Image (cartoon, rainbow, N blue to C red; front, side, top):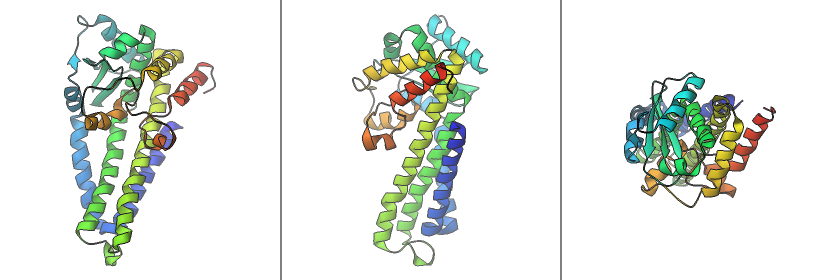
Length: 282
């Protein structure tokens, strides 16, 4: 069901791009915007592992350097039917973890020093299994496609403004253009965040299967929820925001309307779903 929802949301995002492209910049303008967006996000996707690992000063470790961590990743990767990813430790006290890489054969799993100190071994295995599920589901590719289309919509707005409107002058109304400038990227962002939240649910479910016990991940999320807000990565705000969707928990948590713009579902909902899986309800 989550996979179907992700495909439907991607289709909705693509449809929004086509409609806005026709209204603002016509077919040629839409193609230019989409080409620019895909070029930019393809580069990010292709080199995402090197970029984010460098950003966080992650250090690759071997079995000899971190036998318990490396061994757990190796065992869980085997359970998932995945090639062994590279294993990294991030020198940060804020507890978090992420997976990156353009494919299962070019992937990496990274954990912070903080999460290794905070979580007992079984809970950390639940977190590692969640990250391996992201790799197995190729969520980095899904996120890159969504980012490219959402970025393309923003480019369309700028193309329309620069050239003074869309086909037949229908985009020349300045009030309408300002409204489109605000609402179109907002709608694209909402859909993109919804895709990210859906993939988190799917990774939770996959992680529970990979580690063999949904309670491992559910308990880890409880522990992380208790810590959240008390520490952040020691990087710029922009860097933290741009990589929030990759983390096991988002550095930017909030309620109310903030949920619509969150890259992650509410923690209590994730835990409830995992408990339902443990009880055989889903």
